[in-house]
Image 1 (tube, helix red, strand yellow):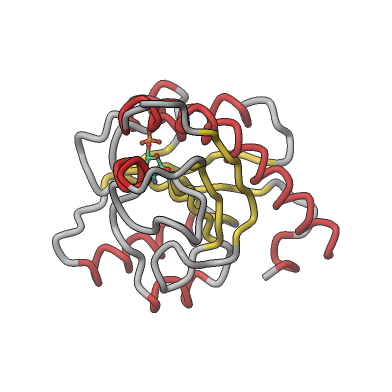
Image 2 (cartoon, rainbow, N blue to C red; image 1 turned 90 degrees about the vertical axis):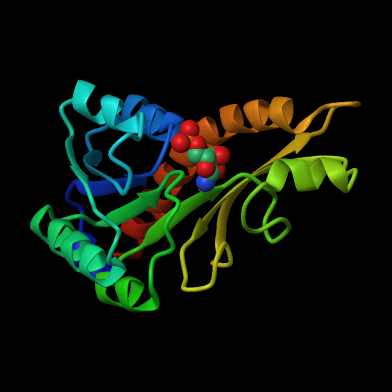
Length: 197
Ligand code: GRF
């Protein structure tokens, strides 16, 4: 896995399903990076607003029909190969990648999750955090494995919850931190890969 990456440009595919604010910040932060290039954006949702950012920045983008998951994943694997993708970054991608897909791709897959994993896996993290009267929440970047939100943690940012803060306000504050954390973690992850070669 590491050898195939070498000291060349690292091509990243970002998978989205919705707003794409993380995609937007990744595009912005890697725009002038000579080592890391966002070269493909995939969405299972044709109406994902994030596609606008890909188009604006002339990044190749594809909509994948997920009605038949097996077929969808096989199309995606071909696209990844054709575009020489080295790393997949999931950014609000609402589909779960199969064990088969992860095994076939062989290269790293990263995800950003809006909680301090291993706490609060899955959906509706902010409302569960508020309901449980937690003092802190945050966001996590982790490697993707077949078990949901459970792979090795490679980046995390803690956020202190304000008194009487609601889930919507907390989610906005955490999202801002996600935008910083994801690029920072990818940069570190890529430079660690290079050191291992
Ligand atoms: C983020 O909170 C991310 O952590 C979660 O889904 C949300 C996506 O937001 N996985 P956006 O589409 O990047 O704005």
